[in-house]
Image 1 (cartoon, rainbow, N blue to C red):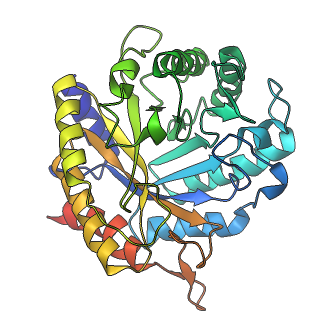
Image 2 (image 1 turned 135 degrees about the vertical axis):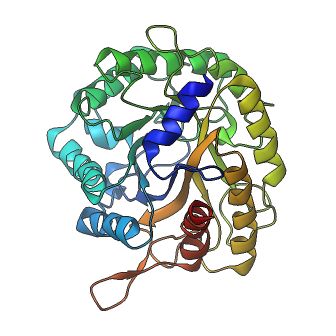
Length: 347
């Protein structure tokens, strides 16, 4: 497993000792209209369109970032037909962002189903959609990206209040469906989320790590099955405040030790704070410093969020157009999300 970890770092290109391999931001908009019960009103969707693609190009070329997570509602992809085929028009809208990510030169483009383990209130595999219906969604998506290894599959955004043993079975069904398309463990990463909003602080203690450890590829291996964690820095860890009160360093050290002991890796796919808050800049910086110290087990971080969020959103990471045809990053992105990635890479 150690050789596998080293090969991943080498393949990423930017990784050196003490540096995670990936850093970037979420490009939000196609998930708008989704709530934490998995109700995704398709009329609420706001397509990032060319602005999202322009942002990704800026983040790669000017900010040195190399990963983007593109959230989308399940209902949007199938035009509200549970168990149905991908809607040609809606999926083309989504795929435009994914191709924009690839064409921008990103090293990883993460597909994220932003439904909180639910469809209109029903938990997947636990009284709501069946595991087969969920697997069918992922089979269709993976088939489309079988020849694009930069695409990673984020199984689900922030499951919560689920039976973790049953949820692990649901995750396994999705992994099987993805791998059967030809998206093998040699070519495509799959991100596995746990319970309790997949928060890094509780990933081990709530049983998520133990349950998801049993998820495997078709051949029984665990190659390119990466744990998916989130972490916010406000007082309740919800990511709803512009103020930050913790650096989560202890949590990431503890989880990092567990990952090392169990020969696993994780990716932080949501984190953030007030865009221009000095306290958040300091504390998030300390969190990412901790992750860099564990760069053998943490692949990287993705800030929340740019795309169609404007300056009125508490955690906006959307760059500001500067009137010269370019973009200017908010302080948190410039100094921390990108800054800690570039600084560590140069040290």
